[in-house]
Image 1 (tube, rainbow, N blue to C red):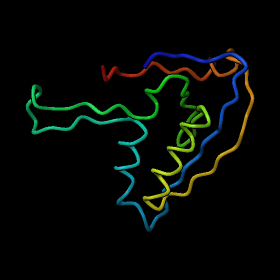
Image 2: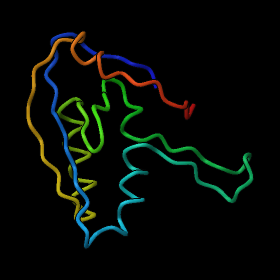
Image 3: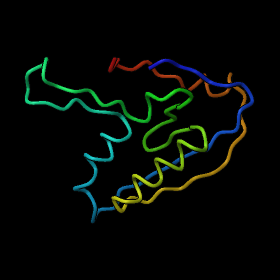
Image 4: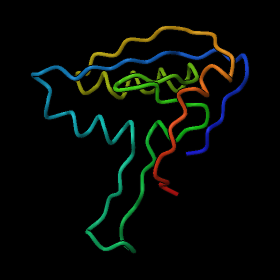
Amino acid sequence: MAFEVDVGTERMLVSYDVSKESRSNAVRVCQIVFGRTRGGGVPDLSRREKGFIHRPGVVWIGQSVLAMRPRDAEELRLKLGSLGVRVALARIHVIGEALEAFHRPSRSMA
């Protein structure tokens, strides 16, 4: 995941929570947020799907908390909401250096 932050650009803080009654959706939520590899177990036949954390400008703050552009936040809210996941959004304005403190190297899905 390339770390990319537009200095001074508005972001949304996104927090999501899978309720006890919806635990069966927890795996799907992780796939949407972090990505997945699909296929029949044969590497040549598998297909990699990048998650929201692989999008430019998305920063993983911590468990169930991300910072991202407003259009990405709304798309994630709709996808997770369709699974019955509670999603909270808040507009934030940060400078790039502030979000850089949360940068975490991740395994590449390229």
